[in-house]
Structures are given as structure tokens and as C-alpha cells.
Image 1: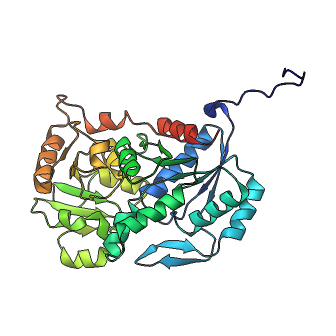
Image 2 (image 1 turned 135 degrees about the horizontal axis):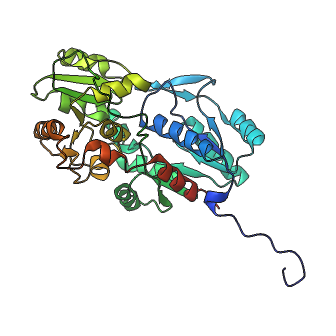
Image 3 (image 1 turned 90 degrees about the vertical axis):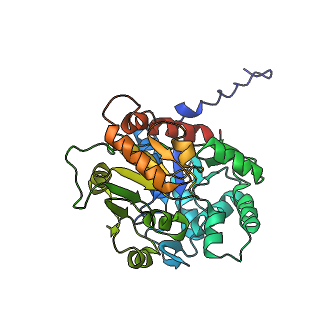
Length: 357
């Protein structure tokens, strides 16, 4: 009891024990196939498996227009009224704003107006992507926008400690870690999986866009076949430029897993990704990685003997092929065994711990 005889309020439940109703607001959603969408889909499924309720606010079912220079991304027009109605119906205990598009901006405005605590996450190296498409836009101006967008959030979640330190250097202060994992039951080696191309098979999975630096991979002098899975605005031009590469379009579910499992080396030429969920998917399928020694690959792989990080990407590829040829000799940690140490449940618990109390 309190000194005046009233019953004291019960202590707040630890975040892991509370029942949450989580509204996830995202401008990135199906039919897009990328790490952001997959991360949010898995987060929702895992939250529900833990007994929480999840509702997504996405462009689906709304009037949208294609994002300039990136038509696969659809931006919802004037979504605020329907978002307010969704919040009123669902009565979320937590609102997470995953992207900085029109839905994210509207959700931010609603939360600030109503004084609703919210969290955000930083999935995409947005300033560098803007610079790649619009060279006249100063990166400093984009970071200023991001500080404005994420500043009022209780927590701005980032995937790795190195990204947290980088963003702190850009003036962000409300930073928390929300790492990434992989579903090792879905992404797995498949005995006998093949692709109808000459081996060795060098695989890339992801968006086919200028910021992914695909030319650095496709221009390499490598034996066998380069295979690209995904869609994006520069696919047609890259197909013309590199006619020997095999562009298979977007793949999902078991088709994607079989493509991973049939490949010899996963090549990740991006220098701008904040994490690279596809790295974990490839490793879970038993495929070693070749990449540049930049944030993302460094955070995911580091010095583990499951891939090769080198500024000479061709050398990284050829050395990773040696790992593929020797992965069953038991001398080193295998890509599959490495991936199995990174569970999604741990990541979901981090997300829950970052929500406002």
C-alpha cells in the first residue's frame, strides 16, 4: 500500500512477459522480395508464435504510385486517415515504424500528435542510395532528414554494433541493437539440388539496383556460370551488358532455397548494405560467401572460416570456392554450422526489449 492507504500499482511486467499488440508500419512489402520485407515477415510470425498480436500497415490495398527511379516500390498516397482508423481499431501497445516512406511519415505524425511512444528501425543505407540516384543531393541533407525522422522515437533499431557506432557518429542518440537471424529449418542444404548451368555456380540474390554494385561481380573473370536471382531497375541493362550471366528473376520459398543449395559460392558485391540477410540464408544452405570487407559482411562473417572478404573480389570468389570444395572435411566450421548459431528467436527478443516500457 501507499502511505495514504491506497493500493500500490503493480510493478510493470518485464517486456518478455507482457502481451503486446504490435502495429508494424512499412512502405516495403510484397511483392517486393528483399531483406527488409523478409525481416518484417519473420518478425511478425515469430512474435505471434510467442503469443503476441501483430498487424501490418503496408501499401497493400491502398492507392499507390511507383517510387521515382524505383518502380517496384509503391508509395501509398494520403494514408493518414486510414492509419488513424487502424490504430483506433487495433489499439496497439507498441507501434514500430520500419521505413521512412509515406506510410512511415504518416505514422510518425500520428504518434507525435497523439503522444504515442513508438520505435523505428534503420534497414537501408538511405543516404548512399539517394546519392547513387541523385548525385546532386548532399548526403549531409539526407542524414539531417533521417535525424528528424528517427529523433522522436523511443528507440531507433539497427542491426549491428558497427552500424550503431556509425550512426552515433552521424548524430543519432536513441540507438538500440536489433540483430538478424535465419530460419535454418527453411534455408538448408538439399542433397541433389542442381541448376542447369556449367559449374561452378556463383550466385547473387537480391535487388538488381545500382547501389548493389552488381557490375563488380558480373565483370569478374570466373569459371563456370554467374547466376542472378532478383528483380530491379537495372536488370535489363545488365542483361544486355553481361549476356553470359543467367538472370532468373525473383524466386521465393523452396525455389529460392534450392537455388542457394545448388550453388557453389554466394557472391555479395554490395558496399552499402547495413546487414545482408541473404548472407545468412546462403550460409544456412551450406554455401560459403565471397564479399568485400565492408560493413555487413564484416558484421555477419568477420573472420569466421565460412567465407572470404577481400578487396579483390575475384580472389575472394576463388578462395571461397576452395571452402566449398573442402566444406565436408571437418577441419573448419562449416557455413551451415555457423548459421545455426544465429536464431531468429534471439533477434525477436531483442526487438521486444527495445519497445517502450
